[in-house]
Every structure is written in C-alpha cells, then in structure tokens.
Image 1 (tube, rainbow, N blue to C red):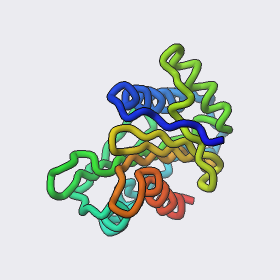
Image 2 (cartoon, helix red, strand yellow; image 1 turned 90 degrees about the horizontal axis):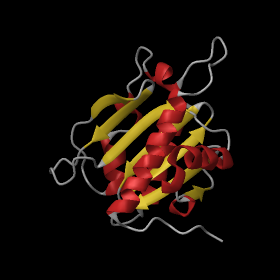
Image 3 (cartoon, rainbow, N blue to C red; image 1 turned 180 degrees about the vertical axis):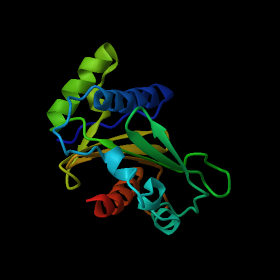
Image 4 (tube, one colour; image 1 turned 90 degrees about the vertical axis):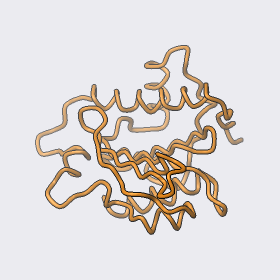
Length: 186
C-alpha cells in the first residue's frame, strides 16, 4: 500500500520544510568522517565543480516545460551547497531549488527516526512517500504545486524541489533532474 501524500496546504508546506531542515541539521551534527573522506559539499567546492552546472537550463526546460532564468549559487548550513533557478518570465522565483550535501541517514527507517526525534509532535510520516528506483533510498513530499525529493546515494544527499509540468508530475520532474545530477556526481 502506498503512503498518502501531503495535503496541499500551507501547514503541509511547513512540515515539509521542517523535515528538510532537520535533515540538514542532522548533517551538521553527524559524526566525524574517517581521514580522507570528503563531504559532498567539499567535493562540490573542488576546483572546476559548479553546483549550478549539475543541471543545464535546457534540461530544466525539457523537464518543466518552462525556461529557467539565471541560477544563483549559495550555501545552507555549514556544508550544503545550493542553487536556485527562477522562472525566466518572473512567474516563479524558485522554479528549481537544488541542494547538495552530506548523507544524513543510512536507511529510510533511520531517516524517519531522525525526523521524528528532531520534530517531535510536528512530525507526520504520512506526509512523506518513500520512492523506489533512485539512489540508495529517496523520500518525496508534495505541497501546493511543487514537490521536494531527497535522494540518499553513496555519501550524498541530493535534494531537488520543482513543480509539475504539462507532461509530468512534480515527483517525476524532481526524479528526472535528480537522475541527471546523480549521473554527474557519481
């Protein structure tokens, strides 16, 4: 049986971003790495690596049927790199939001346990959908007209937020973009 999706309300959007923030906070509190291990953020900061270059404007336009504007790179927390593409026509300031960070959970069950612990009474696991077929495991939540996909693969957390298009759901669009990113960062 498939878990229910997030209701399309402002409250559901708050729960989703709390889950995302708790995932990021978990990364900040993660145990020390073994010598020689490198975080996803450190790898992304290596010479020649451009987090906004992990997906092209053409790939975004093909997925969402909407032309993106110029991307803006940034950081979130101590070790997460972000890139935001607005809609070129100004209709959406966050057409696509990408975050690359360090993996924060080994399994879906650990992810849920961490989120429950950090969110307490605000956590609703029915708001999340486990997604098969991408990364080691992935979690999707939808809100309003957009969705957020968190993919845990190798040492990486790849988080993609995007909306639906005329041909695909928000989840399909997030997965399409995440697969492209995974192929580039390994």
